[in-house]
Length: 464
Image 1: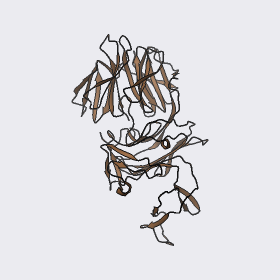
Image 2: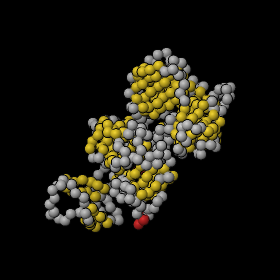
Image 3: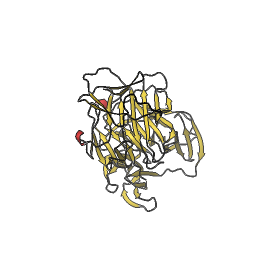
Image 4: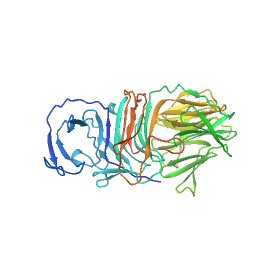
């Protein structure tokens, strides 16, 4: 399934305001701005202002004695997507209108439309392999206060989509068509906390997944399913007839499936073609444009292995852990812009920023890191043989109450101010407050580029 995003405006700010104006710009009110002293019956009107100024520091609109700041040095990224050649823009290059020149490069199948936007231009993203990349700068590494604003239109619903992601902060659309505003806070990745819950005597956590605000855990040998709304209080909801979780992932318009070392793919979900044989196979992840597969040698082998492919057919070995007899990579996931792997039989947790160079960061002491899931700003790990669950990290996700409609322009604005004492994270839809909540986390900085229209990767299942 494809989706087309059409973005008009993206604003990212520190929410720091200043009154320093170094020069007087040339201001021109043009059509359809009404003439002075015009009286109208309606409660709104369109005002078109042109400002000519080489080094614009600040733009404040005064309406009925109240000042509204539209532009100042707190604005660190602004794209209009109008393909203005005088600014140096073209179909593959987008100019940042803030003072910081955080310009973007168009990648993949992103398509510019000069007439398809809410106002003039927009970019269309297919949701699978198209993005605008903004190189990392200090201005984009925001720690305390942030606002993100965009006009979007969804051509298709009921699938995960990314509006913007630097992993430490992100704005996405969930599969249920609600808005997902996420923050990852500072954390110590060597410090994993065990989740204390009644596992009903189950020995293995085979699957972790997030759905409709719940974190689910699937176990064996009795196939029990547990779920939680807060990561702490778990409820057993169902016994299942199966104790295995199949591994699927969506990558470059194909659905991939793995089992018994063989990897298959399908364009329609019905006809499947074998595209790989990686020994023993357990897990998929999509990361930085590559599809990764984790597993090991055949039964009795001595290596836990990670493979990757850029075309879905040709697979390259990128990591051999030398785990020992019957060693396997059981789980892969993406968290805060890194690819993580969990191994067996030594319960190692590995991390990579590029997919080829790996660092061992921790061992839980459990024999098998069976699966990962990212849930509300934390990375969870399910283990065997004692059915324990661990987590590390800190952060939050704020979800909208309103579901986004299809083929309709929607204005989204999200804000977070760590220093406010209450209700400091908010989501606005078409100018109306939809939901708010209070958090106390500073945003974790990283060296990642900012992506528009795509995220850095997925956990098992292909969500991005």
